[in-house]
Length: 133
Image (spheres, rainbow, N blue to C red):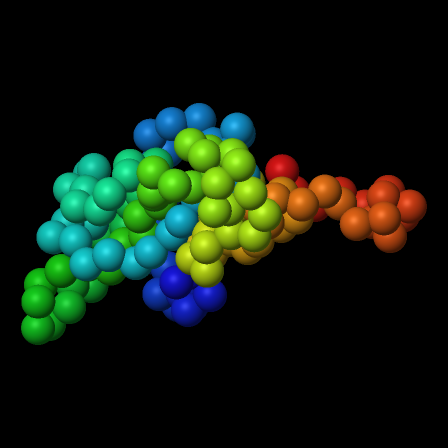
């Protein structure tokens, strides 16, 4: 889950690669996967689709026990809001979901009103505050 990802776990990221335009996505799911390489497109073994992934720098160390690297992968399931706008996540978002506009290499991202499927609160509207989109 994204809330369990810590900054030190993603400190060796050098770039995020997006496989599709994320400007129309309210959220993406993120996870730390054990992968055999620092770079390149990882294999994808979930339902749904991979939306992006992180690249690691040469200073990233492989696990001593498995020889794998922990890299972020961004993905969506078939029942997520982009595919089913009136479905399970018409409001709210999965625990591991974050607004893709808040993501960058070495930045874990966070939920926003957009990712939660709700309009800005009246207090935010009155103050003219907008969250990252």
